[in-house]
Image (tube, rainbow, N blue to C red; front, side, top):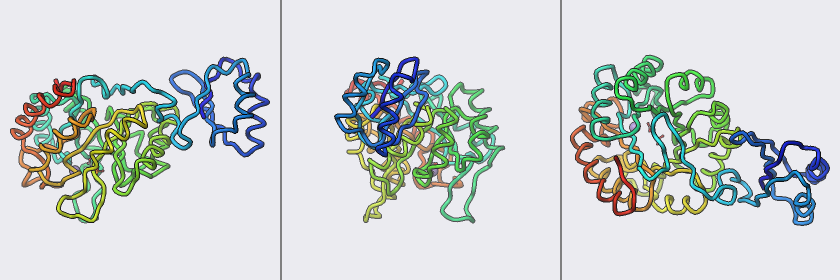
Length: 336
Ligand code: PEP
Ligand code: MN
């Protein structure tokens, strides 16, 4: 339950005291300049009646018990998350493009210019890479962060990049416009708390084994730190079938739409692991109501240092953007 309170705490202090004696957790959250008291679990109706009478309670919301601030009960109106010059969740779809990894200055700037040219609204590029093997390319680190900032400077596109550890949140936030939490860290709770405290926009990918309920609770870790700027990104889950890298759960989009006000993106690149499938699934994602896409692009995917099978080359990406336009239009959205 979420209690939105007025200027003073005194009027409801007794009731809160009573609730905490009953073992109900109460957390105070600074939310868009207001103070919220979030209880877990929801109190019994007799206690609620008392709270309802407390004169300085502005609003009581009975919400999904575990993911409260993320819920539609708390906020029915869809959230729009501003990332630099881009709005995620508005009528215009947000297309995030860029290479899996930033590999060097010329490589990244070329992809960045092409992304801008084709109409992408955000730029991606991994510099701290969560690789399965310790012998694989781990990313350029801080040097890569500087290249992200340089590309933003040149193209005007805001940049999103992954952060792997709580200790590096400040460093990455210095350069990036949005912090990505990758699938492998989707339930790294200290990392979620750290990006929550940063108040930066957060792109929260679904974990490979994360249920929708668990995913929303992961988002709640960010929200409860008073950071409302969370965007969800479906990127496929592990199933028995290895014909694709992961199984894209497209139903997650309309399911989440019912449960949460947070914007929802789809990443058909990591979901399929196969460049031939990126276009069809990108169109499908828009058709089921996604707020945008993350698509990996590279000037020479075959020689890319990571995810070479799934990246689109620059002209394939340009063509895809053209093909997406009528699909977006058919669901009342646009991509440019
Ligand atoms: C990525 O987007 O760079 C990435 C590693 O994706 P995921 O966390 O979805 O595997
Ligand atoms: Mn990748």
